[in-house]
Image 1: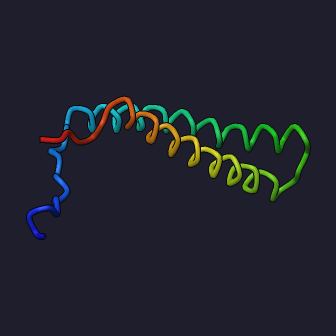
Image 2: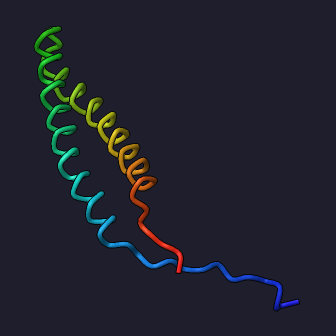
Length: 86
């Protein structure tokens, strides 16, 4: 019975793909989080939300930015797989 049980294969890490995705994530993350910071300030000033409006909107846009980055990395991993089966 033990002969029929297959062990899962461990793949080797494709470091070129991992570094490509990480490099793109750093570049895009800087743009996303910089945009979140600026948009929070701009919308708070535009709608005159007062002293607490700026950090609330910045935190809201920051959370949205985290979701954007998570989706980016998941989609990039589909195109550039991190592991290869041996």
